[in-house]
Picture 1 (cartoon, protein in one colour):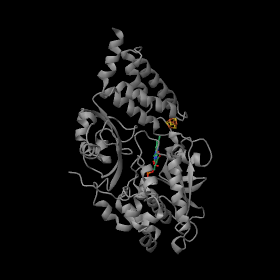
Picture 2 (picture 1 turned 45 degrees about the horizontal axis):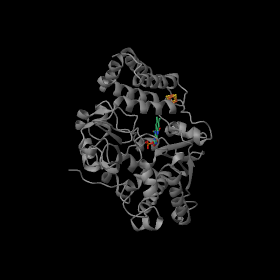
Picture 3 (picture 1 turned 60 degrees about the vertical axis):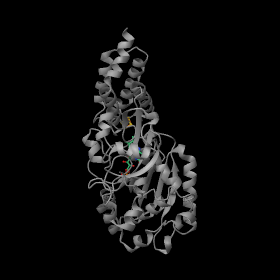
Picture 4 (picture 1 turned 120 degrees about the horizontal axis):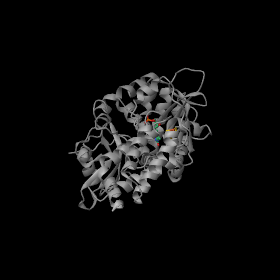
Length: 420
Ligand SMILES: Cc1cc2nc3c(=O)[nH]c(=O)nc-3n(C[C@H](O)[C@H](O)[C@H](O)COP(=O)(O)O)c2cc1C
Ligand code: SF4
C-alpha cells in the first residue's frame, strides 16, 4: 500500500495555484517568517541535516554543496536554478514552474538568504517558452508584492530573479556547460577541479541546483529537518517527483517517498501496463540510466542506494516503461540518434563513439551487420568510460551496454535473419 505524500506537489491539483492570490490562500511564502528568524548558517544547517539530495540527476547532498559557498566575501555570490530539463523521459520541473511557481520563488529566497546571494538566474530550456511565460508572470507578481527586489518582506535583504532561456542544447543541462552558456559562450562542459569547490559564474562563487531541489527547501525551513526525514530512507530522505511515461495506463508526474518498490509505483500511479500486456523493461531515471529487465524491476526500489546496487541509477526518477511488444533494437537506435546529435563534440570517444555505435545499430536494422559488429558496440562503449570531460559519454556507455547485454538475443536475431 502506497502512502500519498505531497511535500512539493501540494498545490498541483488546485486550479490557478500559479497566481499569487490563490497560492497565498494555500500557504505560499509560509516559511519566510521562520527563515528571517534564523541566521544564514542555521538555514544551511537545517538543509544539511534534512539530508536533502539534488534532484537534477546526480543526487549530491544539497547541504554539502551549500557549505562550499563562501560567506562574507568581497565578490558577489550567485544562485543558478537548473531548469534545462532536456533528459528524455523527464518532465517534472515543468510541473513546478507551471503549477506552483511561487513555491520555486520561495525556495529561491531561502537559498539566496542561506548563501547570501542577491541574484538568482533560472536557466530554462528554450522549448519551454510557454512555461517560462507563466513563471515570469509569477516573478512579476512577486516583485509587485515586495517579495522580490530591494528590502524583500520589509527586511534588509535584496533578491533579484532573472529567467534565461537556453537555445535547445541537451548538454546545457550539465552545470558547467550551463554556466558557459549563461556567460554568453558555447555550452561546453568545463574541466572538473581537483578538489571540491563551488561553481563559478564570471569568476564569482555560484551554487547550481535543480528546480525541484530548490522547491523542496520551503518545506524543510518551515517544518524542520526531522519532518523531512520522516519520509524516504535514511540515506535518501524525503520525496521525489517521479515522471512516468511509456506503456502505462496513466502517464504523468506523481510525488512519492524514496525507497518504495518500483513495481508498486508503476501499478499504483500508472495503473499498470497498457492493454493488459506484460512488462518487458523500464529505463529507471531518464534515458541516461541503465535499463532494467522486468525481473529486475520486480526487485527494484526507488532510492539512490538500491538503484546503484542493481547496477543502474535513480537519475532524475523519470521512468520509461516498455511492454512486451517493444523492439529493443529500435528503442536503442532511437536513443543513439539523440546522443549522437547532442554530444558537444569536445571529446573524441564521445563525439566519434556515439556516431559509430549509431551507424552500427542502423546497419543492423538494415540487415547489414555481423556478430563482430555487435561486439564492436561494446568495445566502443568501453572506450567512453573515464576518458571524457563530462559524464555524458560514460552514461551513454551504460545505455549501450545495458541494451546490448541484457537483450542480446534480440540483436543477434536481426543478424541471423539477414544471413538467411
Ligand atoms: C549531460 C547532462 C545533462 C544534465 N541535465 C540536467 C538538467 O536538465 N537539469 C538538472 O537539474 N540537472 C542536469 N544535469 C545535472 C547538473 O550537471 C547538476 O548536477 C545539477 O543541476 C545540480 O543540481 P542538484 O544537485 O540540485 O541536482 C545534467 C548533467 C549532465 C551530465
Ligand atoms: S563527454 Fe561528450 S558531451 Fe561531455 S564534454 Fe565530452 S564530448 Fe562533450
